[in-house]
Picture 1 (cartoon, helix red, strand yellow):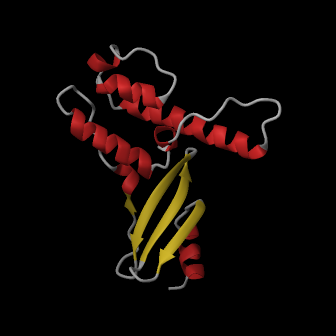
Picture 2: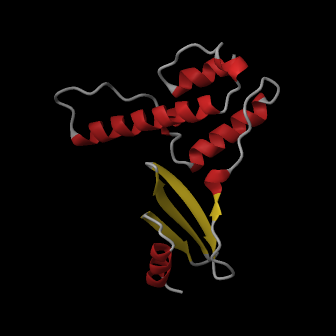
Length: 149
């Protein structure tokens, strides 16, 4: 199967492809698909199978106070797979001004999107008893620090 055949197969499967790569040595393909504005990564093993493994369905249990270490590890892993961990890894860029160029605007928008989606995902994985004691945070790093404490 060549890359053109593979792209056609993916389109038949209704993938809205952002990008895909094929590793000839291992016969694996990684497809990045847009789902509800979030990048979803699919991995395929070829040629044995064309059945997708959706790594975005990785189970992250709700933080309940007794499972912090495992919870945090899985949260960080999941956000990385979803490609929304940028705000955790990078400092917030300077605020935009009237003179900001396109690259600064793109960088800020990437950070802002990552921050917002990461915070929403993390908050959805915290029990109600813990959620209320966290306070209000404007960025994901501060939220994670509050959870650490």
